[in-house]
Length: 175
Ligand SMILES: Cc1cc2nc3c(=O)[nH]c(=O)nc-3n(C[C@H](O)[C@H](O)[C@H](O)COP(=O)(O)O)c2cc1C
Image (cartoon, rainbow, N blue to C red; front, side, top):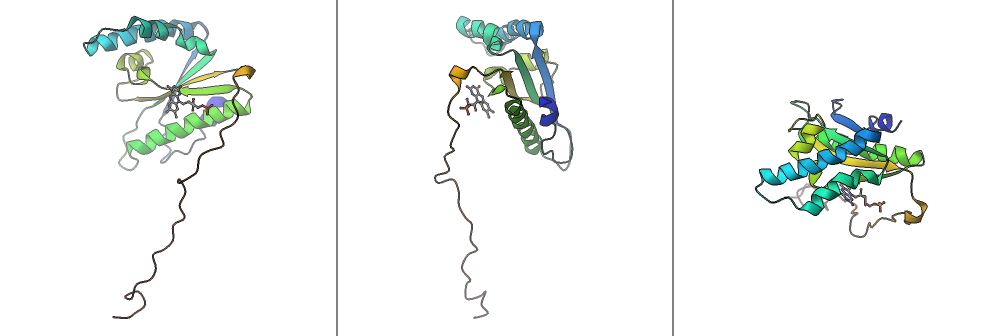
């Protein structure tokens, strides 16, 4: 249901660029070790020493919710639809999934961080290096003590009403 809602997102050219990798149950727990190893490998690639605290955090971070869905964009070669529009479609799909989860009474949290761009993570998920991870979607039952008041938005200075420019002498036929 949540993923069906995701695939109802606006999608220029019907390219279906979204990919979903579901991390559930024991597989989700096991993927924590993959994240930890991927973080260490990425540090080695960049010639930096892995921070033990960060590596340890990767091992347990997926335990924050019972289900994590990795949403990725696999770009389709297209002469008409640019990559940023394909990425935008996957962003819309991700938000649809969040809204569907809310509608079903679940909570969702969209996270990225360094794991989203780590090539070792992409490889472990069966994605190609050219794919982009758009988010790790943490889904689960909301802890009532953690519920915050809804965002009221901050529109100050963010809306303008366009008006046509005033007519010039040329527009009114004078020379
Ligand atoms: C592309 C994207 C990536 C995000 N990555 C993170 C993240 O890594 N960590 C984080 O705490 N929040 C991240 N967020 C923000 C959360 O998903 C969420 O919007 C924020 O915590 C506010 O939640 P609230 O609206 O329930 O207060 C990200 C949001 C987007 C759109």
